[in-house]
Image (tube, rainbow, N blue to C red; front, side):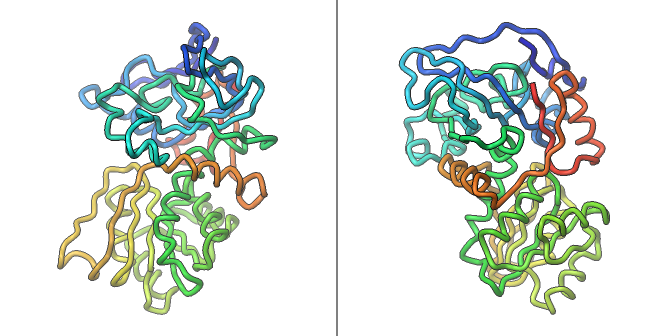
Length: 344
């Protein structure tokens, strides 16, 4: 079968021919119908050799949907022919976090050599992929695979971040989102569906801000040194109750710190290397700064349900598997509208 793999440190991924996998006991073989490209992929492919820990060659893709092709011995809960989405954070399945469905925080995964697909295990950018357990699969019914695949990260991750700050988001609240890309454009929609808060989106050019307004942002402003003052003007001096940073680089987290008031919350979602100091003289009093990772298994089912009911949609651009590397080229140059989807 064909697979898009990261083969050599610092080199672009390439399509290679590898053996079609066979499911071991308890595993599920999926025929992949769509695979999502993510900035996390670009991040790990940018790591120098001394920091890269994901193994080579690595079949990319931690967002995946497909049709159940074959069940390993003892695998139950799904059947051949089911259309499913892959819940990407894989844990041991036995600890307290995993039993709660919070596998992204499994404390034993690393020591047991358990890694998410595309982030250490073979991912979804292939004609077939192995899913280690049926518990990692969420039914998608008749939802279009291209529309569904990004829900597994670009939908789930902001959904999880927003749920964590729901007590702060009333109809009188102001929420700032930084970045209107793959995760950011989903966050805007989710905020409008889940809360009554007014949404202000920051990004680097007018094209991206226009896209944010299409997605439902109430106000937009350029993400630059003037952004905090723009937030002050828009909010009438109130500033933001919540800032969701979907970029996470140093300039954006610093902007986030200047856009809030006392008893507010900053959620750093983007995988940049930015950090925000917390101390008595650094941020407004009782400001909470959090950095969540991915989301819970039940939350993915909730996101899929929102999409099936037409409450949210993912803006996508598709690429055939043989041209999957172009998705990352477009991502790097910042020219994607929404999410890139690779279709085998």
